[in-house]
Image: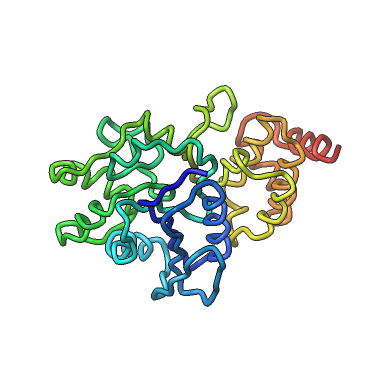
Length: 280
């Protein structure tokens, strides 16, 4: 197991702390960090993770404000790996010592212009000196925090000496908005953000339990559709069926078929194929 004695593993989560612990445990299974922190208002405890109580964080804007202005108080190491319940380490062997050379690495944003092609705060490595720089009032709280750091404020941060990874390094570090088709898969990486990438790491036997714990509303969003598409593209029919059945329980069979149609083709036929092949 790779030893990262200068990296704090951290998740900030007041909404889904149990799922946050799952993400932290998955990361700890891959790397030995200096410490693992869950910052939450929930009254929970864990044998592997230090749970530190914070004031309630209500919504995405408050989360961004905390990460920008409050995270520094909890990080003593040179770097912090910030994870979320839907993004964590999947292959510790993919860690590179050169990742430490940067003050910020997240997944590639290759659709952005040059100089803005690395972002995604949901699974990101940040230096403590970046957190110290962001404490300056010149960088006021705002949302989303990753867009502020990696797009709006990046020129000023780079002028002060901060280093951002390039897209190629970022892709070896993480993946977020990448096509689900195998032919366009950019290959293995250290971690990910977005549950449509669960196929990269989750064992089939563990999928039903995770789906049962998903936050309210997630099955109504396109993340579920992308995950089904990823499983179908890899002919992992049983896993596709697990997710599809959960979606159908949430929105109904007809609505699920309409959503499948948005991926292209006949949604009803694809739904029938998933049910038939997934039940084999």
